[in-house]
Length: 545
Image (cartoon, rainbow, N blue to C red):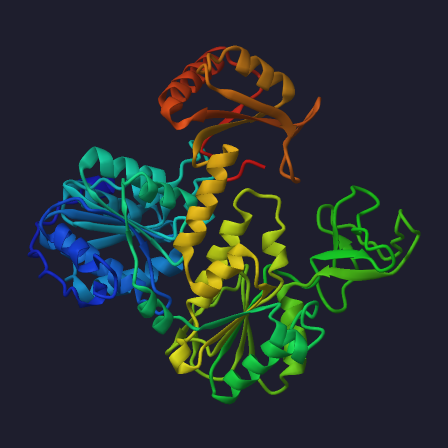
């Protein structure tokens, strides 16, 4: 109430000048996209950013073009680090008072004051994380979403919406332009292109080759001839050479490790069976060099562990975490500074000097210079073997985000991916062709009847609650009921009858409205009947496993 009582400041800033089109000139139809925004039209594009691109500045230029035409721009990015980078780019192009940022770190008073500024029209651009997708802006002319495959865009609380769906819906309702950008491309973004709802914003192949680093995968005959152990070594000789050459040139080296911790997963040395806790059957792990094996769920130590399969009592590392990797590489490259980034200690930026940077996916710091001299992508199997529909898509997204931080091949940049070169996902990375892989993914999902080729809803609850809920749901004729199946993982809610189960409802995209109407009616009945057990309803779930 105190913030609402504050006097509304008058709008004193004038529209900014139209930005230069040179930054977008490397993309086919890039200048035409900005020109359409300046002409108050509503272009819709899926942008595949070049690996050496200053993408915050390109987004700021699109927002400035929209604001110069008297319309508003809404920008959504995954987390606070991207918010800071885009905010700095906006400050270069816009005068003070043209834009605000919305994030949880502001506190309720400051956040609500900025929310009111957008609602009253005193600012014309809002930047923030997923909650900013609902920011009230009059005369909305452009919605921007960066890296729509990041799961941070998914709201974990009801109504479990994705920022992409919110922004696309607002663009349709308010006649705004759309810019979905990223280094990788999701199947959902590819569907927008395949249906001619949006158009690709890509660079020609010669431009891509000039901007990208030299990317090498394992499995080539010449590598195996030089190093017979390359196919199973965690860090083969080609990766060692790339790292040593970059460090010799006083350039930092990025090492991406999929798992955090020290030894997050253990197995029996004799039979290779997963090591489990004798009390709760949870996975065992080691948190440090002098730590005992302990359960990740209940925390009980397992000093006298014995394998129930072969009676062995010796453990081996099944997965090596980021801290153990930093320890090993620190000994191998003695005298070289080693920095770690991940979990609760994320680095935003590192100096352009000789150093090893060990980071988990999504926590890679940028370099205060031209980029990393070498990027090593370790343990790629850990991302590709996940039991998830989006495993390959997510692996490519994380690899491309890391590889984009490397210097171009002309400046000596190298990317070494510890994966088989003949895999389609690895081929897409080596050629830097996310559009080809997204098209392949969409084709396969269409054949198999998986999202986004179909619309899907996930119901989660106890077996009895799911049965009763479905009994009061009048599904469309073409709907398919898949399940029930047990909830995978340790997050299932325990009740008297066991653990939660899930049911998947699949309909053709043409029956989307009918499915939503049926679930809305059933949900209203379930709430009115004051059912003892809750049923969680998710539309277009990010995970269906």
